Length: 235
Image 1 (tube, helix red, strand yellow):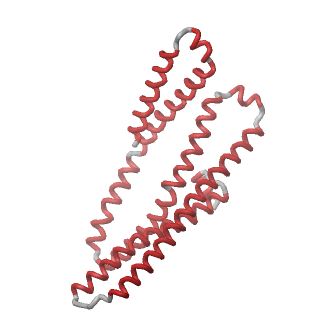
Image 2 (cartoon, rainbow, N blue to C red; image 1 turned 90 degrees about the horizontal axis):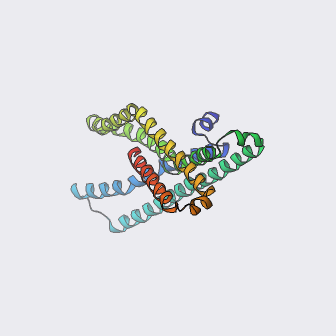
Image 3 (tube, rainbow, N blue to C red; image 1 turned 30 degrees about the vertical axis):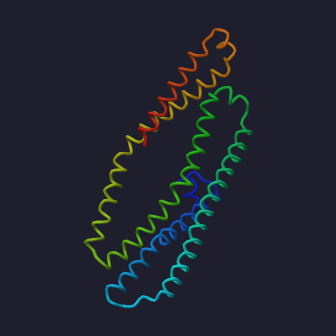
């Protein structure tokens, strides 16, 4: 539990929520498989000439819908409750840490850089918790189970399915340096934007007095466009 807390930057409650959300994502993937399995069973009965009972089929569909609804609803609640609760806990913990710091700390450090770093880190953790980490862990566990099951059915077909996944994973590892470089450029640009916005707000009276409103506005728009370009390159 401690390793997960430090690795993902989570609190104690957040790490527990991550485990629950990961397992709920695992079962949700099986829920998505259920309709396909039902269709295969129906088609198999047709191919072998076995009669399909309409009442049993309707009962299976209703039962399947109920199970899927429960699993998907549980996954949604588990995932986003954990995300927003962890987001609140992180912000509270950060506020408690910041209020303990002496005032001299803020005079010696760039406040815009500090605020940009803190808010971006919290936003990244929140985004990862809601869109990436639990789904990735759940899918990894699901992939292992399904791969073992497929190996018993058809080894060659299983290798054909798994090969592109391993190739994409290797490409992801090899491109790590490029991703870090791109993220650093994007972060530096965000910090420049934050400083420029802060400076423009503080000097708004001087900007109006010297008639530089349009110049500053144009500069802000150019910076935002450059930031958007860097953000697209990261993706």
